[in-house]
Image (spheres, rainbow, N blue to C red):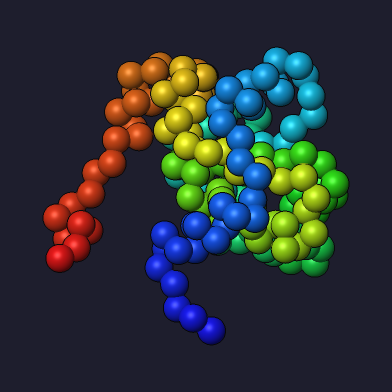
Length: 154
């Protein structure tokens, strides 16, 4: 087995996973087409900001959420193997890898949101939290990277 960097993993996944841009999703939703939106971010991220009616299954438990017989099993997701599913995250990276795994697990019509929620917000599409719609400035500020010097590496 050959070791890969995160960017190499993403490049490989891009060859296998279909992606949608925010405007593609907007059109699907405006046409009332059936689409399951699966948010694979962590619960605290989901609580802060999400696409309306998105289902939250954190990336770390995705595989067991997709199968019967586990504590994390999500019946709605297990039954959706033949449904159109859009996987979302903050920037489109986790969703790309999650969609690739879902394809390996037999999901037939799964997509990743290219640009993630950052791009969704930049396209001025609404994001929500438990209190309702989040204003665009708050959403924009939330998506600004906050890397420390240590995280930038040598």
